[in-house]
View 1 (tube, rainbow, N blue to C red):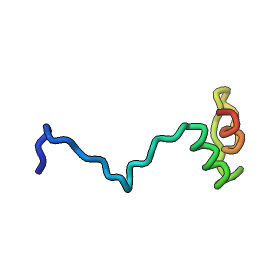
View 2 (cartoon, rainbow, N blue to C red):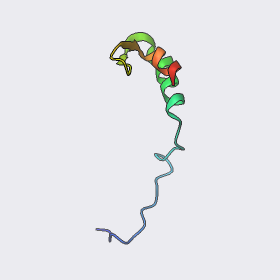
View 3 (cartoon, one colour):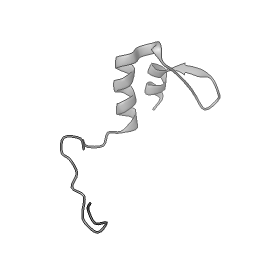
View 4 (tube, one colour):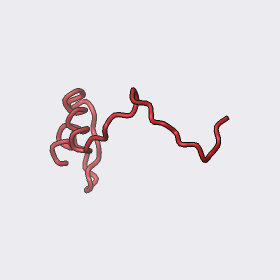
Length: 55
């Protein structure tokens, strides 16, 4: 067991540089297209692709 005071080293294989939300949404939209729907702030269902372009 490790002590709480020990530093935890990040695993380079799993710790990628953080991405912006817009970039992440655009990548997901390119992969899933209009198959996923989300709710916008007004309560309307919009496609994932449209949501990605709004960010």
